Every structure is written in structure tokens, then in C-alpha cells.
Image (cartoon, rainbow, N blue to C red):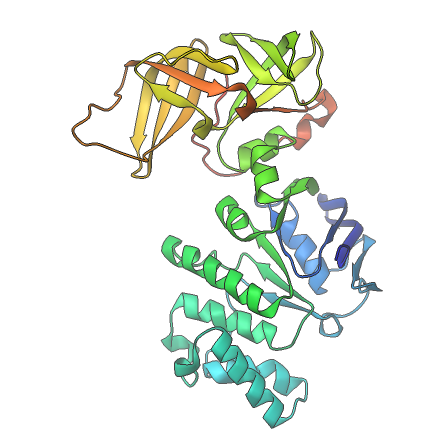
Length: 387
């Protein structure tokens, strides 16, 4: 099952810019694999090298045991779905889907049979004779996918396929893409800068930064166990703490001293010893926030702080709470929300608590590696650092 599509030491430079730097990883047959990262991280360059639109400066790309690095695009069993759809506006939906098979010399009967199958797959049989100018963005995206799939590729490359759609349509199209994948069963390589898309559709994710892969794993592994500050900050929101181990305890826990913050208990999954430095990530939803002091439990951290900012978002509320030198981002989920109950408000004293197992220790960057720690080019509301 493994090593179906292999990138082996792939590098690509554009002038002075090292877009991809000696990247090696493999993709399993039939999985949805996402390349996730900010603009300029190298994800689209890898995709274009796989499609044959770019030649790597070094390294190889191997598909199903065959080196395809030097092959032209039309000789690779790989098709690409672009962000701008790349449909022919003067042709009908049926004619757009049939374009590839007709160009490849398929018979009329074989082409018509496969076009009908694709129309059924994307649930657009009744629109088959319309021009693409007469349909919605989501329908155009489905046609682009069908046009790519009809050529029977071994791999479907999707380059920011939902970027041009609005939020509701993106969410619906994610479900449809997943359904299409289940139906056809081929390998999808999905490029996106949207963490939600990658988390929602992927079997595995490669988090990229500055031409390097920082981490590969399932969505849960990437989110719950980030290997670097970049991954923790880019995949969702988090709170960072830097501290020192002051005590190693039984049961794989340790106590940390954090300047400008009360001492905390953390899960010592890295096997650190006293005086070792620690870089800790704690997701906003791991906190509990309340007016009343929670009961003391052996592995629960409890501190008091002051609410500085609040944003109500329907499904949850975001709080920013000052605890000594730290401004913590906290998400409170509304499993129940009673309008006749007085909500927590600004400048109010609150208790926040979290379990030691809910924080995650990461390796700290060495000084020479600091250039790799580049946060995404977007607004990160809850990046929380000591002031």
C-alpha cells in the first residue's frame, strides 16, 4: 500500500529563491494526501513537478515503481484540477468532459459511455448540454474534476481547488470531493493553505514551510502532537510557553517553571530531566473557564486571571485572559447557552484550568534553525506570547 507516489530528494530553485529543498516523502495508493502551508512554502512547486509542468533541479519522482521525472505531462498518468477550473466557455458541459478522451483518440461509443458515467458521478446529468457560463462556481469545479478523472489517471492533483468558492460552498464541496474519492478510489494530492480544508478531507497531511516538510501525519497527529512551533501555530490556534523542568514526577509528569506565569504540571512524554528547557503548546479549547474555582485534582492546573477581550461566535466564545505576564487565548464551547444566565464579561476575575495531559511539549529550535520559524502570512488572532 505504501510508496505508491514517491518524492525522493526533490529540489527546485527559482533564481535566488529555494522553493523546494531536498524534499523526500511517499504517498500511499488511494489516500487523500494534502500539502499544507503558507504562500511560498513550496507546495505548488511540488505539485507542478509531479504534473510535469516543472522539472526539479535534482531528485526523482516515482509513480507506481516508475521514474516519471523526465516524462512530459501527457505521458504521466497524472491529471490536475486547477483553482481557475480551466474550462472551455464555448463548449457544453458534456463537451468539456469529453475533450480529453476525444483528443486521445477514444472511440465515440467509449467516450459517450464514460462521459455519462462522469456526469452521474458528479450528479450533473440534467445540466449536460448547458454551457459552462450558465452554471455556478461549485458546478464548474465538479466539471473540472470529472474532466480530469475521465482520463483514468493514477493520481489526481488538486491545486487550491476550492479557493474561488465562498465558505458554505467550500464546505459542501469538501464533502462532495470526499464522496467522489470514495467512489473512484484513486490517489488525491491536495494542495491548500487552508487548515480547515486539509483537516477535513485528508488521510494524511504534510505541513510545509520554506521549502521543507516540517511534519507528516494524520490530521489528529498534526493537530494534537505538533513537532514544531510553526506547525502548532499554523494548524489552528495555540498558546506557547517556554520554561524549565524543576521536578520529574511519577506517572510521566513533570513540573515546569515558566517566567511570568505560575508553575504548571505537564505530561513528560519527551522524558525530560530537571533543568531541561521546555517549549510547550496548549490549544485554546483545552482550557476550562469559570467564575468558581474548580476542584483540585492530581493532574489539573488551576490559575486565576482577568478577562481582557471577548468575541462571541455562536458555536463558541473566544476569551483573552491575562495571567501575570501572559495573555491566554481560550475557546469556550457552547454545548448549552442559556440567555437568562449572566455570561462572563470584561475585566472579570475568572479561574482557568486544564489537565497536564492536554499540553504538548515540542522540540525547541536551535539558534541556527530560527530562520525556519516563519509564521503564516495571515492574521493569527490567538498567537499568545509573553509581553
